[in-house]
Every structure is written in structure tokens, then in C-alpha cells.
Length: 427
Picture 1: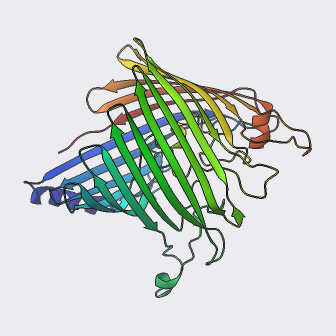
Picture 2: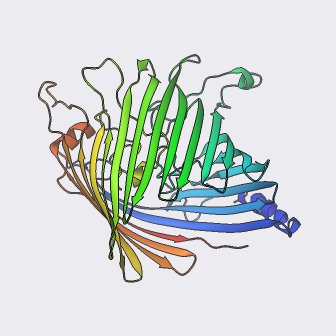
């Protein structure tokens, strides 16, 4: 609270001083209670389900003129009960969610720098990960060209340094950037040493096309041990009457630590609008490790919001491994009105994308991993609130236990949650 008061005071002073500019001040109180009984991986017989409530509180301030724009978002993340009801200690995580400025060199060309969300298209490669309370943010600089004809060209660069490498002048000359997690620099919560990307998107009357060029460098050992991974991709959409066709292809090359990298993913889907509900049938394929290849052939979806793509129970590509088996995901998705709200339904059938062996190392395991059912009810609460209620069930097969390292897990793996979000606009 001592750190929050000066920040709020500064924002209020800015409000009083900028009466003629476009200034907005808004907030967010977001609380989610979860019952986890096999979330992210099958639950072992000796474990009990977990129940908790997590909360995100944000204060957004945005100031915009014809020449520039500044956006600041303060954020507090906490688990209910992290602080005692009478306690001087602080168990939450308070800090900056976003802090960026954007300078408009012209109506079409601008420069944006600072801590920011980078999110494109369906968030396959770049996403804000807003489902997670902390979100996903980059400390980066972007050069952005955007015109009124539907063309966007963005180029970004980021360079990360650890300020804890020593006192001056070591901080200025050292290059070592240890990952944030003991799982290594390539783990989902690990950071890159530097990242460069180019993104092009063109909107057409009945479709769109996006091109991705991404380089992320990971420091996996000593100061000079930096591996550069390149990701190249195309993403397109075409409308044919009431049907929308979507296709994606991404290839990864370069280095993964000491290994040469050659991996790929592709996705195809079709969405049909009906009188009652849209129906989406799709298939995603992310390559796994080829046991006969000397290269690393496992595809990584980089900075995407994987929670929205590969099942809501987060069994794949959300901070947990799948033994480099890759993934095949055949899915059916729909959404329809229900009373004053809407009900979303997803069904996923998961398979490995590479050969997986039983514990004897000789016998090939089944490629089938299991089926996941996701249901989410969404109900607006006036103009500032949303209530969500979700339930997911994973019908896991033996190969799922194998790649997750959970032999003898429970046959029932489910997850239920309820979320309440209020987003007031103060100014």
C-alpha cells in the first residue's frame, strides 16, 4: 500500500493537469476460484484435489494526444489467504503490468517502447496470456506502420539484462542473463536474452494474410552460450459465403542450446455459421522429437496464449512438459446463446505427433493421449462486469500417464472454476 499511494497520487495529478487531452482512468478487479483435480496433468492416487481463489487488481491510466500516447497499468496479484487478517507482511505481487509510450511520427508511422503486451491474430505466437493473472509482457521497442487500407507492418526488438549480476560497472558490461526458473531458459517462464521480429498483416474484403519472422536468443549456460532460434510463419483466412477457412504453417530452425533445430507446426480449420451457432472443426499438428534424427525436431509455440488453443486444462505448452512428444489436436468448437449469457463448448482429441516408447524403451506406446471436454458459461453483468463458470473433463489414456510421468493416476481428472470480473471506468 505504501508503494501504491504515490503511484495513485501521480496519476491523479496527471489527470488534473491534462483537462484538454484524451485521458482515461479505469480499473479491474478479477477474482477466480478453482477446483483442480488433475489440472495440467493426471492427478496421482495419493494426492487430494486443490481449491483456491486468486485475484488480479489493476489500475489503468492512458493519456493520448495527436503526437504521442502513454499507457501505465499497475497490478497486484495475490492468492486469497497469502496475508493474515492482521499482518504487516505483504504476500501479494505488486508491480507494473504495462508502462509504455508511443510517439506518432505521422498518422501511419509510430514508435512504441516500454513494457507492453505484444499480441497478434489468434495469439498462436504472440499473445497477452490474460487468462493467467500475471499476463505475458515484453520489455521491447516497436516500429509500427499502420494504414487505413488494412496493412500493418511491425518490427520489434528486445534485449534483456539481469541487474543483479553485480555492482557498477559490472551491470553495464556483463552479458549473463540466468533464466528466471530452475527449469532452464527454454522453459515457459524463462526469458530470452534478446528477441527480434517482423510482422506483416494485410486485411482483404474476404480474408487476411499474416507473415511472421522471429528470432529469439536464449542464454543456456555461460556468458557466451547464446543460441538463436528462428521461427518463420504464414497465417491466412478466407471467407467463402458462410464458411471461413483458416490455415497456418510455421517452421523453426537455428539452435536449441547445443542442438540444431528443425521443427514445424501447421493448423487447418473451418468455421461455419448456422442459424443457431457457429461450428469450428480443426486440426493442429506440432512436431515432436524424431528418435531417428540427430536434430531437435520439437516445435515450441514461443510467446502464445496456449491456454486458448490446446484445451483449457493446460495439459500442453503451458509451463509443463509432454516428453517432447509433440501434439496432434483434432477439435470441434461451438458457442450459442443460453438465457442472458452464452455457453461455449470445446471437444479435443489429443494424440502424440512422434513415436513414444513404453518404460522398457522398446515397445511403442499408443499415439492416443485422450479426450478433453471444455464448457464455459459467460454472463455479462451490466456494462462493467462479467461472470464466468467453467468445467473441464479430461479422459486420459495410458500414454498420457507415460508422457506426464504419472503412472497409476486417478481415472477421473477434472477442473471447475468460477470467475467474477469488474472493470469500472473512473474517468
